[in-house]
Length: 603
Image (cartoon, rainbow, N blue to C red; front, side, top):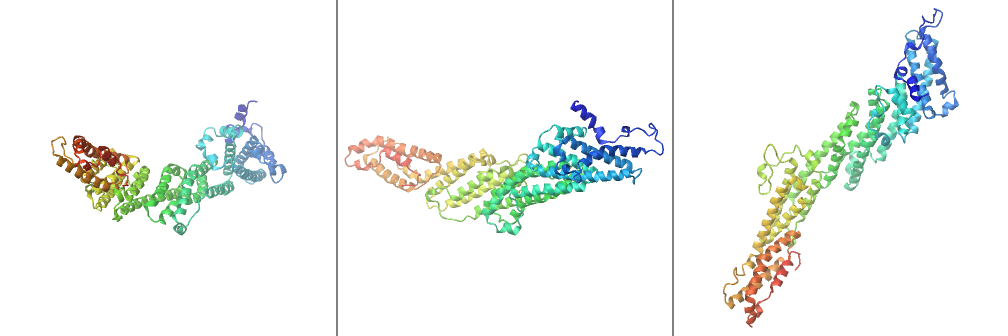
C-alpha cells in the first residue's frame, strides 16, 4: 500500500487534530433506546477500545519491555500512533465531561491519561538525555530557523516526514520532543514537561559557559588582578562571546522555539530560565573590567576589542534575547557597550595628556627620531585599525576649536554639508599636539641646523607611518602632502644653515680669471670648512633612506659638482706650482664619497 495513501488516511490534519462526530453512527440511525449507551458513552467506549491497548502496552509499571525500552527509539511510527491515541483520548474526555463528569469511562480515561503522561515524561527525559550530542547547541544552531520543521497548513505531514523519512538524528530528536511537548501541554501536563526540559537544558548551557572559561568574578577579584592576568581573561572572553552567541545561546533559542512552538509564553519562560544566568555572566564581564581598571592608553586595544565583539554580534544578541523576560540580558550588553565607549574616550584624553606632559629636555643624538614620535605614531597606527569602532564611539564628541587647527597642517573641509568626521579631527589633533611638542624639542639643539634636521627626521617618520597604515584613509592624501612639504622645507633649511658656508667658499663662476694666490685661498678655505662640516655632521642620522638620498643629492649638486668644476679649471695651475701643490687636500671623488658617507651616525 503506498506510504502517501497511508499518511492521508491516518495522519491527515483533519483526522489528527479534530474529533468529528461523523466517525460515529448517529443514535437515531442505530435506533438507540434510552436503555442503550448515550452518544457520548459510545464515543468514549470507542476511544477507550482503541487507546487502552496502546497505552497499556507502553506502561512502564506493568510491562518489563516498556520499562527498559524507548518508544520513540524503538518504533517512530508506533510513537506517532501513541501520541495520536493520547490526543484522541483527551478530546473524548472533553466531549464526555460536559454530559457526565462521574462516568466510569471518564475515570478509566483519566487513569489511562496518567499512565500515558508518565510514559511521555519518561520518553521526553530519555530523548533529552540520550541525544545530548545530537541536541548540542552547535548541531542545533546550524539550523536557520524552526521553519525547517513547522508549517501551519501542514503540521502533521511535516512531523510524520521528520519521524519516518529524515534520518538525521538531530532532526528526529527535535521533532519527537516537539510532539511530546505539544501533547503534554495540551493535556495539562506542561509543568512536568517544562521541569524536565529546564533541568537538562540549563545544565547544558551551564556546562557550555564553564567550558568557555567564563566565571562570575566579583568586582574586588578583578581589581586585584594584575594586567597580564586580566588580559588573558579578556582574550578568553573575546573568543567565548563568538562561540556563546553564534552557537550556545543561538542553538538553545532555536531548540526552545521549535520544541515549544505551540506556546509563546512557555518558550519565552523556558528560554529565559535556561539562558539568562549564563548570558548575564557573559555580558557583565566587560562592565566589571571597566569599573575596576585604571583608564590607561596601553589597555585601550583590549577595550576596543571588547567593544568590537559586542558591537559586531549585536544583531544576533538582539534577536536571540528578544523576549521581554530576557530584556535584562540586552540591557547588560548595552551597558557594557556604553561603559567601554566611555573608557575609550577617557583613555584617548589620557593619551593626549601624556603627549603634552612629556617633559624630557635631552636632545636626541644625531638629530634622529625621538622615541616619543615612534611611540605615538605606532600607537596611532594601531588605533587606526579600529577606525570603524572609534568612529562610532567618537561620533558625538566635541571637535577641537577651528582656530586651534593651523591651516598649514590641516586642510579639512569646514563646509556644513561635508564636515570632517570626528575621528579624523581627533587623530589630526593628536598629531598636532605631537608636532608642537617636537617643535619644543628642536629648541634644545645648540646648532639650529640640527634643529631643522631633527624636525625633518621626525616629520618624515610621521608621514611614513601614516602612509603605510590606515591613518592615510583617516587623514587623507592632501594632509599627507602638506606634511611632506614641511619635511622638504626643514631639510632645505638644514642644508642652508649647516652647509651654505661650504657652498659659499667656492666661486660661483670658477672660469673667471683669478690669481694663483686667490686659487690657493679658495682651496685652503674649502678644505677647512668642508672638513669641519663633515666632522660635525658625520654624527647626524637620517633614518629614512629617501630623505637621506634627497639631502645628499642636493648637497652633491651644490657642493661636489661646484668643487669638481673649480678643481678641473685650476688644479693644473696648482699642481704646476711647486709651492701650491699642498693646498689640494680633496679630489672631487673624495668630496662625493665623504658626502655619501654622511647620516649614518659615525665619523
